[in-house]
Every structure is written in structure tokens, then in C-alpha cells.
Length: 518
Image 1 (cartoon, one colour):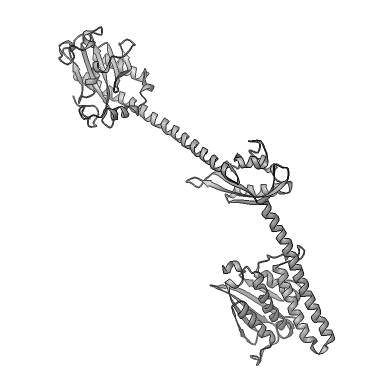
Image 2 (cartoon, rainbow, N blue to C red; image 1 turned 180 degrees about the vertical axis):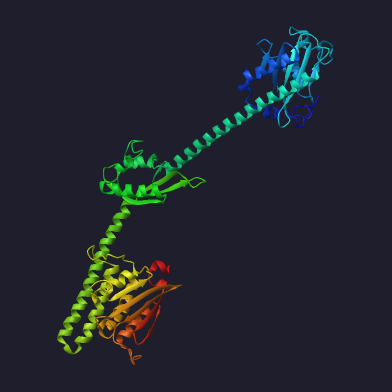
């Protein structure tokens, strides 16, 4: 009769018992002990073969276990060395013993000579998928069966053995799943332990939330810093730790991050365990799964109170210094004005000088305001903002004489002074001789990003018609050239079409701001 399992049988002589025992350990044998499904198989096997007894037997290294028994009294299993199944599991098919008392292999076996009085035995081997013998499904009788089993009975016993193997596989797979779950839990617990250990050793306060923003973890540093009992700031209670003036702002920023998935970053005042509020930088990033869904948020709180105070002190000093520089501009402009009054013959020249000094003062105040009241409404690092502020004296309302279009660039105090001189001179000349000298005249200033350069094109329209290139360049033109070339590393070109003056100022991008240059 052919074997029911197609896997190659491992020979007993070559078998490594340790490996076979290891293979058996993968099956949850104990979970099948006394299983009703196996008992149904032994019941049916016994009836099919016309005998009173059936057994599912598993043999380990030094003992055998009856997982199910029919017609065999409960009690200790026979020793492995006496087991008929120990012979069956090494076979290549069914083992049939019609009369054990006359079989040389078994006639002296205690199961034959003793109280059990075993005479007939038929067993089908149980072999694992990887070829390791595990035991057998067998049927027994105390009287001989000279006729053995019919072909149908042999086929039925083989099919029933395959069913036993299916139950064993289920136990193995179930054991593997449970082991996987246990391992996953152990790994998760280990990861959680490692995370908490790492978080508790960090100088920052560390926290995490569920995807919906529910705060469910804070490290030890948080509780040390705030003095709050563990667990008391879970959920939404964290916001109560902030200064009342910062709570709504912090909530708004946090809701925005939860809604968009964008990183969370904000400065706020957090209550220290001593009762005082200290400035803290809060940051958080989302953790996403393979599908991009947020599974958790991790955040930190860093005490920046001393740094914040130092920055505020620097700002106070900076504003005071800026105020004094502004006063210097005013004093110099006043001295020039007084000089003009006492020397009328140079009053015109001194008036132009005073206007240039005033323009420099406006540029300085734009990038370095000396107070909150003097702070410009536009961004302090905006090139367009600087130019619009510079052109205010030349127009009654925004946009009526000047139109600024195109790109915008960051500009710092280093570039603000020469830019102010350049465009103050252009605006002054336009108001005296060019487009701004007439009621309908306009100036269009276009800013263009051209690779590594910024091109500013000044076009006057609506002024007196021009009749060609002027023969000489005055001091103002020289001042423009020096400011563009020497201080900004750029160049200036002029054209005099009949419609009005056109000036192109080309400046390297790095000259506008130290941050760009580096």
C-alpha cells in the first residue's frame, strides 16, 4: 500500500532524533489531547475495520502519547520501546499484523504477552510535511484477523490518517500564529521599553499622541518639569499648562497640524513646577504607515526661556542703537539745513544732500526700526517693501506715481543703504527733470529674477519728451554708479528714448542679503 504522505521518508538509521523532536515541538500536541475531532476519527476507524479499538499515537524521543483512543481504557501509555506504532511510523505504507503472537517482531512484546493480549494491529504512519515520522493512526483487536484488511478498509485507514495530519497541521499553524502574536507583543513591549528609556534620558520633554491628537504619553522630564502627577495631563489637559494668553494660539496651531499633517512648531509659555511660566519651543512630527496614514504623533518641548530673554535683551539694545543712529541722521540733516540757511549760495546743493541723508535714514528705519511704532507694515526684508517706503514722499497715495511689479527678494541692512541711494537719486531727478515733473508722469519699476542676478528696470513715462543723450553726468549719476558697482557689485545702463528715461540696474543676488550670499 503506498504512503499517504508524498514527502521523502527520513530513514531511522540516519535520523537525527533531536531534529525530529524539534519538528514535533512545532506542533501544539497538548491542545489536541482528547480532542473530539480525533476521537471521531478513531471511532470511525475502528468501525470501518471491524475492531473494538483505535488510537492516534504520537511518539517523542522517550515516550508515546495517545491523543485519542477508542476501546482502550484511560491510563498510562505503554513505553515507547514496546509500541507497535514505533515500527509503523518508519514504514512506507500501512503496517498490518494479523496475529502478533506468531509474528517474530512482536510475539514477546509485553502488549502481546500481558494483560492487553494484543493480537491484531493495523497502522498508518503520520509523517510531517518535511518528512519527519511523528506517530500513527492504528486499529487493534485481541483476536487475530488472518484475512487482514480489505482494500477499502486499507484506503479508508489511509484517508483517516490524512485527516489526523490535517488536524496536526492546524495545531502547528495555530501554535505558529500564537507564537508570532506573542513575539510581536514582546517586540512591541521591548520597543516601548526602549523608547521610554530613551525618552526618559533626554533633556527635552517628550510626548506622543494618538492619530486624533489625544495625548497618551509624557516622559519623566515632563512630570519633573511641570510638577504634575503622572497621567494628569493626558488627553486635552495639556493645554491648561500653558499661559492663558498662549492657550488659544497653541490650540489653533495644533488643530491645524492634526487637520493637515503638517509639522507642529510653536513657542509658548509653560508653567514650571515652581509656579512661574517659562518660554518653551514645542515641536511635533507625524509617524505614518506604508499607506501614508498617520499612526502617531511624537513631539518635544524644549526650554528656551534663557535664550528668549537674551533675544529680547538684544532686541532692546538693537532698537536703542537703531534709535541713536536715526537721531544721528536727523542731527546731520539738521546741521546741513542750518548750514544752508547761513550760506545761501550753497543752499541748493545742501538741500539735495539733506534729502539724500533723509533717504538713508528711511532705508535704515525700514530694515532696523528703532521701535514698534516705527516698524514698517510690510516685511522688513522685502525689496519691494523698501522701495515702496522710499517712494512715499513722491506720491500722494500708493500707486499713483510709482508702480512696482515683478519678483520680490530678501534684503538686509547691508544692501538697503546703496539701494536707497540709487533709487532716491532716480526719483529726485525724475521729480526735477523727468516723468515726475509733470502731473501725468509715471514711473514703472520691474524686478526680474535672471539666474544669479536681479534686474531692476526703471522706466519713466508721461514726462517731458527727451531729445537725446545728455552730454554730461552729474554727481547724482556718479553716486548711482558708485553705489551699484562698488557696494553691490552690479552695473547700471541708461537709455534715453523720447518717451522717457530707462535705467537698468543689474545686481548679483548674493548682494541683497547675507543669508543668500552664504
